[in-house]
Length: 220
Image (cartoon, rainbow, N blue to C red; front, side, top):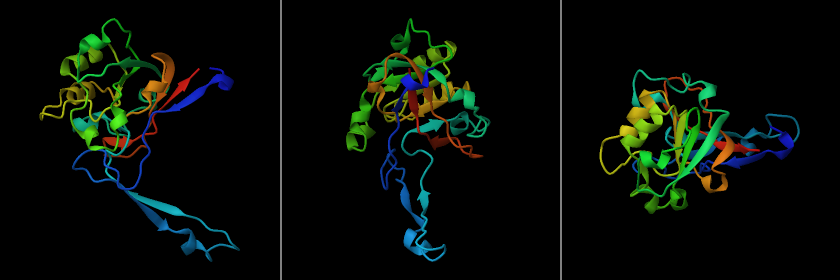
């Protein structure tokens, strides 16, 4: 790609103090570990530093699900390779739902691609409306995407599964196959249907299955 013509598009939500991502899961607490005023005098002259501290659950903001999130023997954040979450050719599929079945992906070449499902549900972010009645993929859609060789699946709604019941077929099918999931995306309306690269690398934390990511696209 020609760096002079590239455009970067943020596809993640900003993490803020107290925000709720998932009902029943506490929002993050963000504070100073070392405040600037407290650091004054530790260094020469008026030199100060701030060291922040954040206490949050792994399922905060826009985050990546690895197989370990669902399966005890699956790869965790350390086990998912960079090639699985970076420099992936992207494809946007636009569907309002509520149930998004395999027909939404019929005829599309998804092999080796990050398929991002644009539902527009991110317009409800940080409201009660965001938490219920959201668009979701069906188990049949997950099976179709898996069998078609998809590399990663993302969605801009509250959950890739239907949370009205207790079954989680999409998580179970995709993560069992080693296919990462990115939930709570935003800004997919700014992307073309194809012709971009998707990135969502997490930090390498041992023994964890999910973590926030600065998901973004490179266009051009």
